[in-house]
Image (tube, rainbow, N blue to C red; front, side):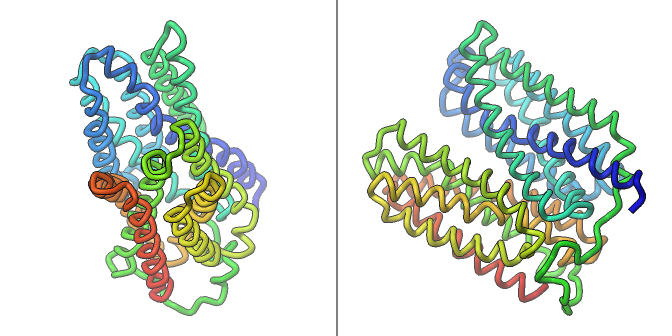
Length: 392
């Protein structure tokens, strides 16, 4: 490989990591700011739900339509534009004077986040190994952790939540400038060989599928199911532990944080072994561990068992999203790759917007039903992945 190509590949990957850190930054920020923000703006505390739903649905629209935008403008300019959108949304929020400002901010925030997700996933799937794809998604976890921490710190100062949003918005715009400066690197990185780093696919005999095949749409369903299970666990685990198991709010919060930390740590660890064992084997192992952990969570009444179940659930879920994204070029014809990844990104947002809400409705009957929603979702996920493996 020419020296220039090696340098471009090595220089660009940390910048892409920063892109996914930036994607995670806003995700938990509203939750950290909302207790103070809604009082300062005299907004009902329950309005956070509609705001998140609007942003999530717009992210889905952006993901589904990303292939046409990326085909026209290419990945790097789309990522730059998306960072500008999300940065602008955070700055608008920092200046908000009422609910209309927040509603306006949700539009660029949702559209920008969906395009970044689809664009970076597609680029890494085509150009880098499974190791980098898993570490890319670990970076999202770092961003999702740092965003609330930045906001929590800002709220304790004179700057308040407005200062927190301003800092995060300027960070996004700075990243867009960094992407602009390194624009030429994106075209210098070659696409990886089809079987590179896939120990379980080097002797594949099945033909590659097209975007509009059953396999193409099933891939989107799988990502919707995955995110549905992850978000349901992340949103409702603490409530289950408090309302049904009698844990303190602090203890339940620590257990929920451990769930997300285990996903991030799991993806870092998977990055060291995925090129040896292949995406499919690690996804299958992850599904098995996630099912066992979810079932344990249903019946875990003691703190050690509850904490262990959530940590194991996070470790089981860790490889599924990045490995399914990275596997797309191995399953589909080259011209279908970005289309399928865009659909997966859009469907993931739909999954996060629907199943956790259904779990919430069931929680009004009995919060004990929520862990069963996670179990059922993981069973459907595993069956769908098994079907896709048979087809492709």
